[in-house]
Image (cartoon, rainbow, N blue to C red; front, side):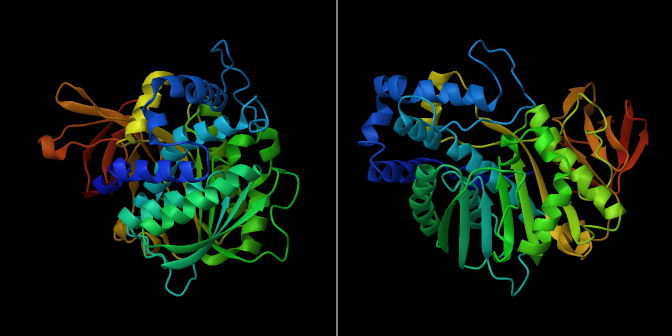
Length: 416
């Protein structure tokens, strides 16, 4: 994954001003000066940020791992100050999650995906919270466009009504900053994986977005999830529509996403789900190299410039979010081949993606590569600094010899 510089730099002072203006208008902040006050942050924000961070990372107060395979209990109803809890979430977790979704959008754009001509922009976000994913799409489309219509609509679904209402205000402000005239509708709904996700008479959507949605489910709740999702997508996703799923980089949570992908491929083998193409990050329907190893998982990592206030929060909370890790999956409801959906792949037969940073071993670069043969450790000797390759790069039609423990990239046709 390669994030364009304008997107990575898009969270400076103007973004901060928009965040503060929204919070002041909604009476969650009295003014910008509160974010300059170490006393205010230490009393009203940092304890909530630390607690939420431990919760999302499946840690208890003793910093010991607990129930990493478990789902998340509702967290908005706990604690003595829900106002500051929501303020802290919005300040600290909304911006990085927004950027993660925008990064996925930028990867689609980089590989040439374009919104199908004539397909209206009607989108749905599950677990929307403060419209984080919808705003991530807005940021991605502004800095790395795929041709979304200027007019469109979002259905935002979440189990916390006050956060949804804050998200509606924030989304309208943020959309307008990118000249997106997208309407929003709010749906307050509790998470229940045993029931149909939408009423049968609900409309179809061109974009189905789940941002940190599976994170709140247990593995047991996701048994047979692909079949249930395909039934929903058959009914509620437009032909040529997109399904985008973004999840944490934690091993157990990432493997939930890999397991969903595996189930989807099994459905295809049985003649079901044939209309669904796995686009990213895998560029195909090969078996997952990470899922085959019990201790392995798959995640991306991107770098951004944090809002100035978020740097202060991170410093006080003991967090380091200069780089952001996450897992993701992009599926197209289309029978078109990948070469048509992602034109940058046209003319090539084989793809491997670097799924780790590359580091120097003598004159070689060493990294992990993932493709049709699964995940393997590999080396490549660049001819110059311009030939260096790194995490997220895609090798097209590479000549690779060796086994999963010791492979060497001899050459490749091009680097995507």
